[in-house]
Image 1: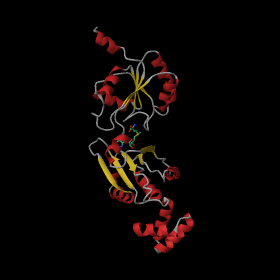
Image 2: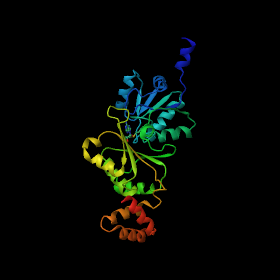
Image 3: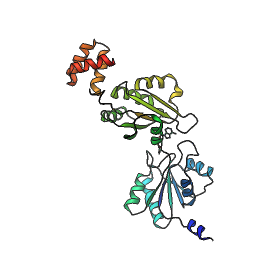
Image 4: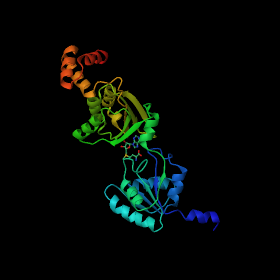
Length: 286
Ligand code: SAM
């Protein structure tokens, strides 16, 4: 055995957090493949799903399922194996583990018990979407999935009403229409949105529209709601929206039934805002 192959066969016993493709199977780094080839065990969210990726790259390794329901129990076992000298990789179904995916408990436990954790970076839908969305990227906040239930979703969005940074969400095709409706109610119809759909896949597409235009587009054709979605919401533009969003929403609603002057006066009373500012905003926007 050469000196080189001796080094190759002793791979450091650590936990390797490895990013895998989010669609296009070629989006995987050389280092990710080398690491997957050299670890002793691969922990995966869904072993059948990840088995297809591994067989594409002719990687054959013992696999173990690690998902939300067994992560605590499996973490103990995997840490035991690493302490016994084995190298373990963690991958998820797509993208970077721990980013709206399992692995937090395992990494946390490794750190607590002095086991090294090594990142092998690569794709993640949040960064991929942001990189081409055309919204501000100097500061952003990743919000993951919104709660499925209406009240939880509204509360979460209301808590972000004054957020000036670009906001990134993951969303399922079943909920995207409802979410955009809630965005209109809470952030207003004019807020700029970007939907990044099917990233790195055959039908990859970006739509950059106001919230109300986005709703019209989604409802136009059921095919528009198919696939995987990242929803990006522009941060609050405080110069333009110096009036609170809930006051603007009230004004919009009242303006549907009343003359602007009356609607502005009522909104001013309800939200303790200046009547003239609301009236001026209404003249510009409604
Ligand atoms: N760990 C992954 C990552 O790093 O992006 C995210 C996993 S999370 C369970 C899955 C969600 O990510 C999808 O519902 C979708 O919102 C988003 N996503 C993943 N792949 C995507 C793609 N190719 N195009 C658009 N969104 C995607």
